[in-house]
Length: 269
Image (cartoon, rainbow, N blue to C red; front, side):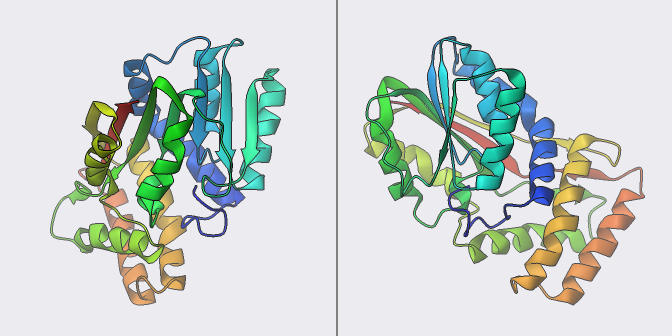
C-alpha cells in the first residue's frame, strides 16, 4: 500500500479479510520466491507496503530471533493488526513503521532484502519510489518485487461478459494512477540503476468453483465491482451484468478460472 488515502483497494476490515484470504491463496508462490532468494536466519528485511503484515510474519519466521523485519505501512489499522499478532506470538523483532516510502527516512546500506508485493502496479511514479528504496540495500542485498502483468485473466467457457473483465480491472488500476503492466518496465530500470537481475518468473493459478483461486476472485469482484461504480470506472448496468454472469459461472461445475500473471522480479545491488 503506497499511501493510505490513495490506496485504490481501501484500508478497512473487509479489505483486511480479503487480503488474509489472498495471502493464503498465493502463499505457495510467495514462499517459492523467498526460497529462491534464500532468505535466512539473521537477515534484516524491509517489507514495503506491508498491509496487515502477512508477508512480514512469514519473513520473521525465516529470519528468526537474530534477524529483524521492518514493516513499512501507512495504515494504522493494518499496523495495529500486525502489532497484535506479534504480541500474541511473543516476537519483539518486527518493527512497525507507519508511513510511506516518499515520507519516510530509511537507513542506508541496511537491508539484506527489500520485499514489495502488490504495490508497484498502484503507483504513478514507480521509478521514483524504487530509486528512494535502493540506497537502503546492503551491498549484495536484494530488492524483490511481486506484482501483476495484467494478462491471462480469463474464464472457460468463453464468450460471456466476463471477457470484458480484464479491460475493466486495467481501467480500475489506471483510475487510481497505476499501471497494470508495471512489471514489464522494472528489469530495465534495475539495470539502469546498476543492479543485477537475478529472477524474473511469471506465475498463474487456475481452478474451478471449488478451488481457493476461484473464491479469491469471487471475493475481489463482489467487493470491488460496486466500488468501481462509485469511482466511475463502470456503470451500474455493467456491474449488474458482470455479477450476474459471474454467479452463473460459479454455478457451472465446468467453469475454469485463470488468474492474471503474477511476476516475481529480484535484483541484487
